[in-house]
Image 1 (cartoon, helix red, strand yellow):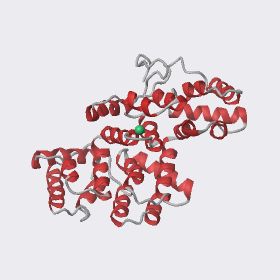
Image 2 (tube, helix red, strand yellow):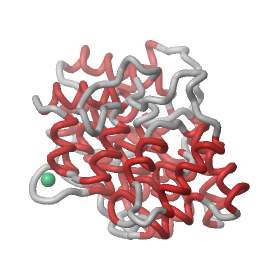
Image 3 (tube, helix red, strand yellow):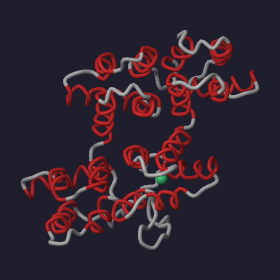
Image 4 (tube, rainbow, N blue to C red):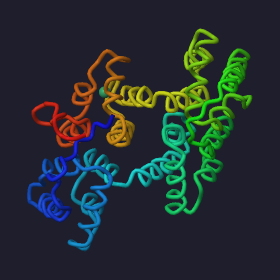
Length: 332
Ligand SMILES: [Ca+2]
């Protein structure tokens, strides 16, 4: 369930009204970040698109440029990420992760999130957007920028997947696939292809069924068995792929937890999880976070952030940034 709260039908201001308020807030001597957050933090992707078009028409410059030049710091980064269309946002995140050439799972996991946490129609839109922005395919850039061979192989397989989206489940295939994966784990051959081929080829409903069968057949979950199989980038990547396929909310709860745990904050990861899931399943992420860490997501995010940046993230979480009240009476 989405956490984003948008105005009820009939109460949504016209894009021109939003633009006038945004312009005034950006131009005022003391920047009115509260207004900017309260408008943009309560609009979905489609509504933001209309506001951006209207802004360009009315003010002859883009909202993106104005946010870029007038705002700063974490608020600016999060807001700019938020107002991009989801596929543009994802393409940009993928490109940044690849060009960083870190070869670390932490940076590259956004590619797994794109490939395994979305339906194929959306994944293809991200791929098309990537080409239009960077004149290369994501696959080419994986080939050129990821040096670690098992990581490169896995990302290529997941990203070039062309799985179908039908709900049909083949029960006998699930048993076969579960056994093959169990075998690969038992032999500690995570890179022998079997696990990867299955994860990158089968449909999402089929995979979910296979994961359930795996647990019935072998007592532990696939995720648990993989977790006991060492600790390297490939193993982490496979676990993320399984989580993004079966329980994306678990994966994103962990991303948020990792981003705030300890001294300092990894704002980029925190933004990625909140901005990308606010319109999809952030309420489920919040529930999962409580179960997994026996802690409150809103409280933890508040403790690690401050000012308008905190208010913006809290708004996307569907809470009132000032009063700390849940505005669930409004339309989701
Ligand atoms: Ca922290």
